[in-house]
Length: 300
Length: 236
Image 1: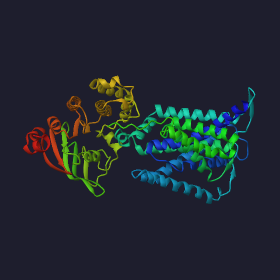
Image 2 (image 1 turned 90 degrees about the vertical axis):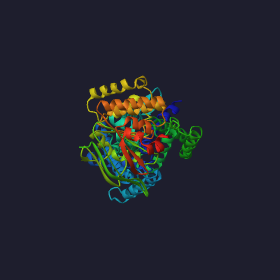
Image 3 (image 1 turned 90 degrees about the horizontal axis):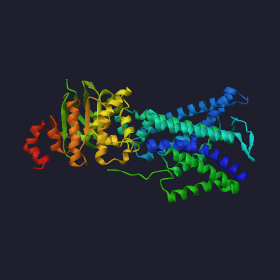
Image 4 (image 1 turned 180 degrees about the vertical axis):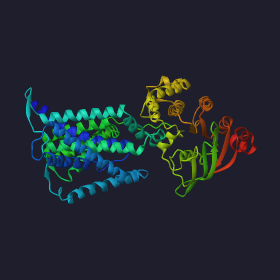
């Protein structure tokens, strides 16, 4: 039982990482009906941003919680801005075309970003070791050994998701995001600057991916320029399992993926990734619109 | 000075010419109707005025100011409100949120509440459904919500695209009463309508569009009694 609880906490930790990444997929899809195939690369950019922020600002000192928070914010802002730039130059010109155009553009951007990073001398093709934002510390609660980092990651992610949900439901920009997701022309007619709203969505999505990357690097500290691809796929599956377009769905899907992966890999380590896809297929067989997705109703 | 002046407007969709050089104007305080069959170019014209459609050539002036290439979100701030074809309400939001979205350009909170109250006075049924998802509204209620949104947005010139489409006759009457009332209270109205009888009865002046050209123009009453119009649009 103690072992199960331990695995469950690990699963929730990994799930937080997937959920933060899946939110970006689902928000972008919700607002411009596009699958941003390179979204996983935002995670990679974010974890490199953490690496550079820490080495430039703090050298090799062990950093405290305040510094870690600062690094997260820097990484989120840098990655968010890159996300805004990518949307501006690679997707916006294609917005009025068939959705497949911007999807292909996204694949191109992903390849471009990965290979650009490979040739930039101070990033380079070799893996880097990410700095620890938080030292591991084991505490024992009722006979279960828990890593304090796991707890912090899970709680911090839940807080961020809570804030995001509040922003979307209760603020002007959140209301505009929901309106633009439903009808761009009608939103523009009410005075909403659709381009800015889409930019804001990319900023948030890429920024959350960066935070997800920071958490991931803290757990598995090997940075490579292609690390985003596999994680991006898993997050995409999470978003689809939960019901793409729905943020709560992305969170639920992310946690399901994380827990399933950890539980499966504790028994059959080689099959974890494959099992994730099987879970996807089974859920979609019974609920094609995802767990929280609503079937599309059109009223004439 | 004319409130709205459209001059030699051309709108193309690739090789298809939807609007081929139409010119018309709207004076302050008028109700002007554009009537004509499906595909005559009425909707494209309204969409071009509010910046949703790219203009191939020609000019659109609002209060003497050139707005031909002004983006939609700025045009509404200049005072043109557009109720688009097919209502286009936000079905993922509640009735109240739809109205709040319409109040995006309204700075003062007191003013927002006042205008919402005005809209509820005209459409009490919306007030009953204020917390309901807009998706649960009937077609007529959706049109009421679309008009209510325009009331909340305010604006001096109101463009209405097919306000009667798909609605029961009793609701059509209700919507047209509201349109005429808004006009009496000072809003200038440009109306697209397939229901020519309804449009001509309400309008001061009207233009008849046929395949991208304006073929007739006159006062509402003149056109209502014009034999050609009667044969083509009024079915008599």
